[in-house]
Image (cartoon, rainbow, N blue to C red; front, side, top):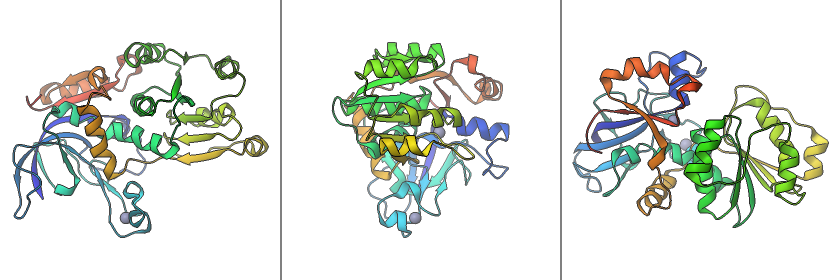
Length: 316
Ligand SMILES: [Zn+2]
Ligand SMILES: [Zn+2]
């Protein structure tokens, strides 16, 4: 175990829904905070791989290690998974005790970059599930933080990525900051536009990162014959699709949940090498003093939040 000084805390939809009381599997009261950039204060006896002073990303997924999923290396969907800041109290406090095997140090990254690793893990794992080929035509639906992380890792594979996003500011962000030229924003014309982009074939891989049931149902119609659809965002309820259309395509549907332990190490390496640039992501930040006022405003779409961060220290 190690005692961690909490330096940066990323805020995401999970936190905002929990704050509003709209996170059905939440038990209250609960201390939030699952996207953490920390500095190690002290370590327990026998700990040698982590030292006091190390800056670390924190894997919030506490898995059992023995269930059918854990045995298969799928630590992300452990049958008794407990997520820090969701099922148990999280990191919105000065310090926490945490198992060292869930800490991922970096000598060069700042704590604000380390606090983004968990969000990036969602996209990294979703892309791993679907394994795009180089130059494969890939459509990502939704360019919120999760969609952005999917886009980032799809680009790392060399896929040809297009984005469907209804909010103009988000389309602009994708074009300006991620250099994606093919961005669709009109649901009426998108089927034709997708055929135009793919010479009539439609994309062979589609990711839905909206968490919107209408979008997820519509996504079945955007996939090429023989293609695959990866559902990254989730909804509380059912998703329906037309079976003949699904069978005609012989489509593969993939779910993607959280990220695996090994993804954390890989993502840190990709940020360290500059292949993944988190620079433009943090659009809003505050310290504890301004937090109570700022937090509810981040719920509003017009706030234009890509990533908001609670900044408790000055470690970068
Ligand atoms: Zn999150
Ligand atoms: Zn397990």
